[in-house]
Amino acid sequence: MSYSEARPSATRGIVFKGLAAAASLQAIVLQWRQRHRSRTELARMSDRDRRDLGYSSCDVDTETAKPFWLP
Image (cartoon, rainbow, N blue to C red; front, side, top):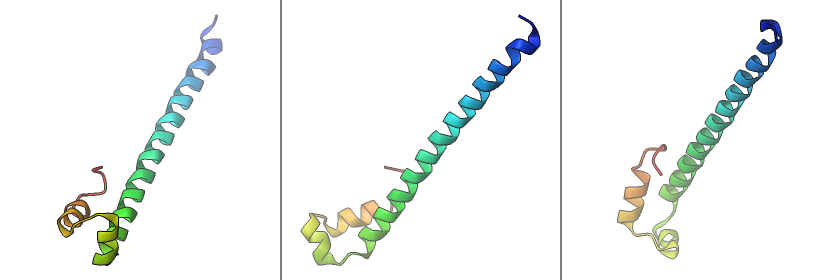
């Protein structure tokens, strides 16, 4: 097998790894956005709604103080 015959498959492998990494990064960013939206929504809820969900004020303060990248 010559170098020119082996090269396309090697390049294809690199491209697939790059696509997999991009898909993984996209999944992470989507998860971060969801956490941000959820925490923002929780912060905007009334005390009554929070109590209905079983959250105390301390629980809400703790959760909404977290940065988006922390679960």
